[in-house]
Image (cartoon, rainbow, N blue to C red; front, side, top):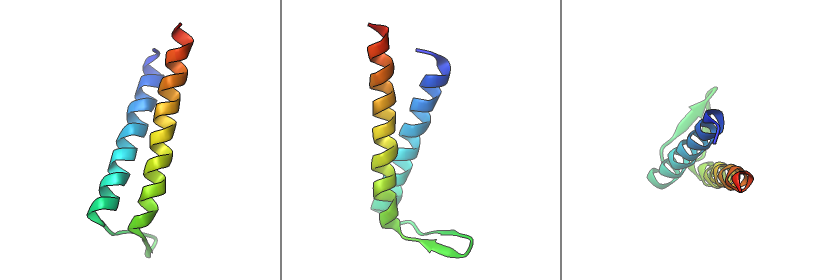
Amino acid sequence: MKPSITMAIIFLAVVSIAQMTRFFLQIEVRAGGILIPPWWSLPASVFTGVLAIWLWLENRSKKR
C-alpha cells in the first residue's frame, strides 16, 4: 500500500471518529457565527467512515 493511500485512510478514519464523538457528546460548533447542529455530524461520520473503508477495500483488492 502506498504511503499516501495509507495516510488518506487514516485521515478519513480519524475524521469519522471525531464526528461521531461530536455527535454523542453534543458538542456545539459555530462557523461564521452560524451554529452547526450536532446531528449533522452523524451523516458526516458515516460518509467519511464509508470512504475510508471503501478506499481500504479497493486498495486491498488491487494487491491480489
